[in-house]
Length: 429
Image (tube, rainbow, N blue to C red):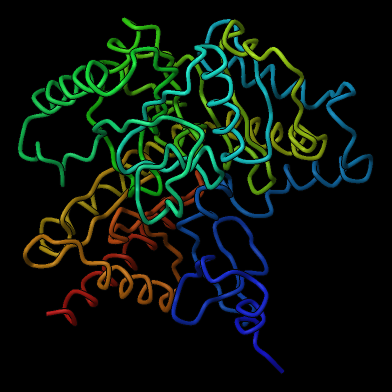
């Protein structure tokens, strides 16, 4: 009888990666814990890549989804859908974008596609600015604005893309500079790029306030606000990719863009608001959203089941003030991670905000250490903790538990992680 792994490899592509030397299948979840196919329990510090935002099997959300599923799973956007309208009203209100309209998709990738379509139609240009080390999805156009080679299987793209410096000061030519100096240099680079490498009529810049796949790279506060000042001089739209930073995960703000003193022209969202249901979308000013001259629909975007579940999730986030919990638990976790970095030279940098913490692991000479990262992940799995990884070199641990994380769970998971790093680092000597 073939194993589940053997069956997977037989029918699924080799470029679909799996975590761990012995991959696991997760079959049940409750709160911040999940169980695998062999009955082992894990504390979930990755939340399905920041998707199970309020935890597993939350009764208030399960009940809404079950009731909606019993009534109707799908109609079409050709008909009025009450939970879609109600969710759009709430997201428009929370977005901070004036006169906002919302279009729903099924994923962050499709949200990126839509934002790029709208921006290029609005500006009548296919020129786009993206950020080095970025990731915005796996479709043809979203790969065109993805600034990391390991996630770019093709150089072909319908866009003319130019990449600017982002917030990755740790390994940039400007490492060691103050935040103010770093921002000045990146701004000079942006102006120079616009003057020398583009035809001038750039459609938009798309940026993650904190880079997700890139390894939770966190720019100085105000960084993108200063960039937007330059963009505004030329009428270039700013798109904030909030797929991972939205809904209060950073603790300090409801949206990641809040750290930068700006209001985006558009923002994209997905992941957490569905708490596991497939939903994404774009929010934009009405004059921007209405730039398309032809009809457009998303067959499954905004369907009754996904929007009912997302509305229940969003109400849960607000009713339990999970943004405040993300700040409190993130601060608690960060204090221990900073102490780990101070005593363990194999931790090159700790960065992030709220419940979105990245730990870059390095060799003694400061070079990226993906092998150590793999060893740490195996250690944490064996100790009952699930974590993620990212970064250009695959050497960044990503900790992003559900926003409902308790203090006891925060301490438990962080302690497991600390010990795993110390054990793996000791073996690597």
